[in-house]
Image (cartoon, rainbow, N blue to C red; front, side):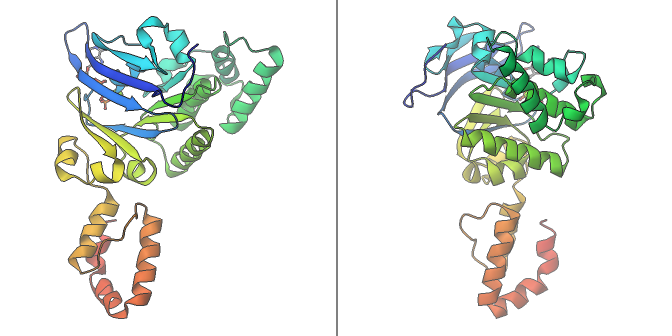
Length: 301
Ligand SMILES: Nc1ncnc2c1ncn2[C@@H]1O[C@H](COP(=O)(O)OP(=O)(O)OP(=O)(O)O)[C@@H](O)[C@H]1O
Ligand SMILES: [Mg+2]
């Protein structure tokens, strides 16, 4: 279904409202435009409406008012199955989307109804298990995986279908550093294939380092939408969203206090250390001051 054009946003949300049957108002007039190839974070405190919003993208939730357009077509006119072939949603709680007896069957089931020939199905199963390091668990029940592996399987069972828009709900939650790194590499690879990636996350450090645009939600509204390094450094917005200022920003403020001007375009610890190394080489006297204030600075990390 649905043709691509570079001029049409891949997702356009117009005045979308949604009230759950129990009368909880979850979305209060959302407007949003997402272009092909974008990498976007959706952030905001618990209950802000993030998960509800992304469920309107593939028809799992139909807006009470307003419309969602996917690649220029009104989602209202398409089934969940049609929309899901374009938009893959990877849920917050993976067990909600896994129900086969083995990991291999889970992937095989996902590939059903895509009209793929037998060889292609086997190729995709093997390729997917390999990418996600799940080969050794091929015949294991999804119920007997660790939390991290379950999240991987949930992503694998959607990504094997190769949808051009991927939406992850809380992918870094409860993940260790290695798993987060795996996920970042996975996303990099998808972005290089011109996929559009949307990530719901509470992880400020992850967002500021890797995700260029952020949409902040509060109480069913979008309260900010812009470059991550601008939005996540505004104290008022951060407080309203129950988030904390990124460490790198706090560190910058501490540097200012001891007379070192904020470096431009520095969003990761690695970039900050490189900047400081260079700066100290050039400014011996300031190095001493940094050293003397080291304890104060180290508290920021
Ligand atoms: N199935 C449901 N029935 C009734 N109300 C719901 C349902 N799911 C969510 N809600 C309510 O809708 C509002 C938005 O919930 P939603 O799950 O979209 O928030 P969220 O931003 O994803 O929160 P979290 O960060 O905790 O996942 C909340 O008030 C929530 O309690
Ligand atoms: Mg949620």
